[in-house]
Length: 447
Image 1 (cartoon, one colour):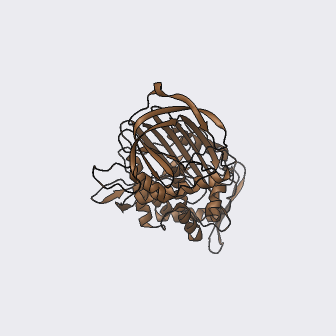
Image 2 (image 1 turned 135 degrees about the vertical axis):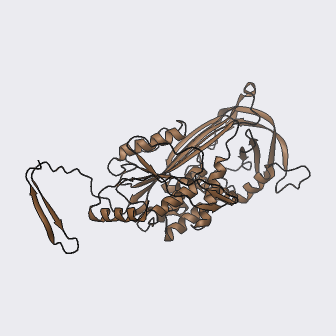
Image 3 (image 1 turned 90 degrees about the vertical axis):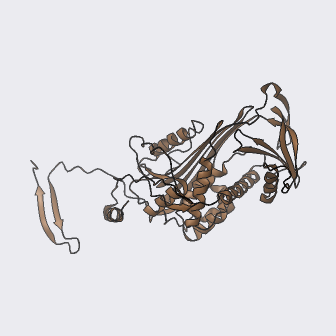
């Protein structure tokens, strides 16, 4: 969006808070050069929006090629923090979340945060300070996620910024969102029609998750919400060595409540296992070797919510990673192992606001929140809703996740109304500086 268009919008909003609709489609630049990457690159043009929606894209900046590993480590630390807080809230419940999806939805909010709010988000998300280096790292993270696709493995994601058309969204924020996440701006009448907007967002998430998350939001969730930042993730991955269905058999499982339950256990051999700090980990690779599940068993006799330190997890995963023969094994030693793993099907949907507040993000939900880098009219986070599904079978894993982060405007715009001049009316043309009436007319019959 050009500066003159942006200024015009500001004048319109200041004069009467009338709605505007974008008239230019700004497609994210996609180019590659030696040592240079551009966000949101792809061979296909963005899909046209559904009827009634308009979409525009910021200009993705050229950023240097950097390692995605530190950002994956940040998501892991953040995910363990959320898991620990969630478990302490209900130590007997099944818990499922996608650190990637939750970090992406909040990461889009972080790109629009400032001051103490940005500092709190950086601390909770384990990310560096906002700036070009952050955008380059988040871009590398997004590119690495897209690179997981391969034979037998499907990984796809979608990031979007949804905004009410009556509100300003800063072009600079859209540029950062395009650079870091390949996210575009989708306009929907969030303030005028929250229920209809929730249905539209749900439809987009359902499509991105192949129908596994058909419902995430309700109209009540979006009350007084001007922006919704969404992430959707889908995974369908086949094991490198599938379990034999004929070997699956019932067995006993001791639940977190201490009771005995029956489970269907899959049996297999030829896996790698490692132990450290009382934890035992087994690596279950998927086809192609780009993706693996690590199953982690806590120390025997540990109850409640045993903490898994990041350093312990790092040593375990390092020990399980492939390395050349004769190479010094990092951290814990690994060994060949057979496993008995229950078949599971998990599903969760929850408001993350209480957990995030407990982790130190309360400022983002309060009156002192600062999201003015997203919009001069943005106030605070309203809702953070996260849903995920996970099914583990003999063939592999099918999973999905979605996150919605709602941001409230600082002052709700006046209700939109239609005025029809279908009876005699006046027209007054004035000088805006002095109010001098240049022309005054009454229209009694326009014909």
